[in-house]
Length: 83
Length: 155
Image (cartoon, rainbow over all chains, first blue to last red; front, side, top):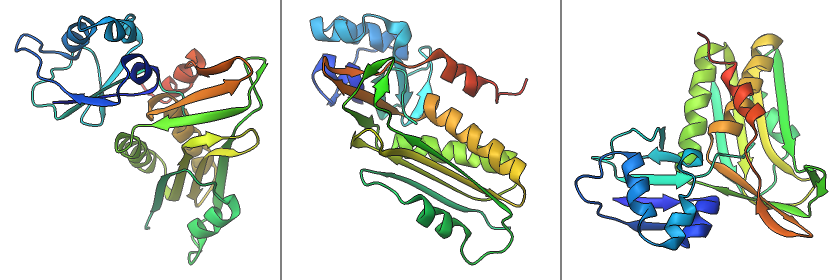
């Protein structure tokens, strides 16, 4: 699946998007955040406060308990500040 | 009654008068147009800023605005609406966002415009980064914006 990062999540990780293949026991958005955060220091920094991280699956907002199976694109970003 | 909907995300500035004219042309059933424009200030939290840079999530930003436009049209009798959100680098005094709502009567147009702006601020995937003498930093979301959006959720 494709993963996209925006704003300071993108800056801390150092990339806009990537393709990942998480193991089968990574079932929810929250699991995926935990799995990504263990990759290296920059991911750990980006996801150090999971409660402020917002997520979207296929362009729709989801909560951390949403299942990721079947997702084409998952995005992680901080709370939105447009308008 | 047909509802004309315009949703655009663009780097270029917009002309408010031209957008209102486009929304109302060739029809005589509109009795009220409400216009909200969000403008880049030169201060943020008491500190002066030189510019804002707006980042967005292409695809989702359009989808999210469209979803809220559809909600607005189902809740209020609107003849048309326009949402334009700029991205990229924006200087103090420049436009950031435009919401236009058109209806037969003013109350629906006022309420729908406020609803759309409240949801745009909290749910549309845009992020502001400010440039100041101290460097650049991401603007933090405000709790009162969440509270403003939440009041439209009827129990």
